[in-house]
Length: 117
Length: 118
Image (cartoon, each protein chain N blue to C red):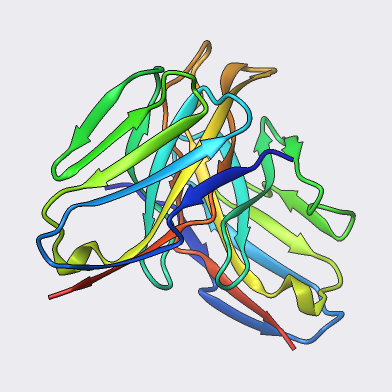
């Protein structure tokens, strides 16, 4: 069964460093998302991406965050200067997108655990 | 922002018992979804509900989309040890984008931690 894959599974970084989290969405999906989950809390939306541009972003997604689809398969989340409070699980998700209304589910990756020290 | 209130926060039950959890919102959603998350894993979709009043089953799971479109419940019948995990409800709205209309971001509830004692 097709799946969303994320790398690395765990990343430890020093405060102030840049990190790039990588995702390979399901191949025929066109709509991509990043969510994060602070330990013990709910999953929170960060950003959605379609047709090489951001469709929607939350207030969490400030200037320190950026997303990119550098090639036909990868979808990345960059945090320019990490803070302690960026420590969380980061989930990538993807969906099909049809013209018109699509009843489609979001498939989530296994997540990247980011620890900022 | 949009808030989903999910209850209960946690449940401790004996194997074989039925479980019920629910979510409420102050605003309307077009879709309600229920996910399960195992430790260290991403959320996995259990049931998706697309119409107000819809009642859908998936094995021992049954979920309903409230008629007001502001609430949903999930029932698990005859629980087994592998039902252990965190269950999240999520609401979704239609959004218009350049490529057409699709479902936008998911808004998650706070989660229900389920523990099943053998």
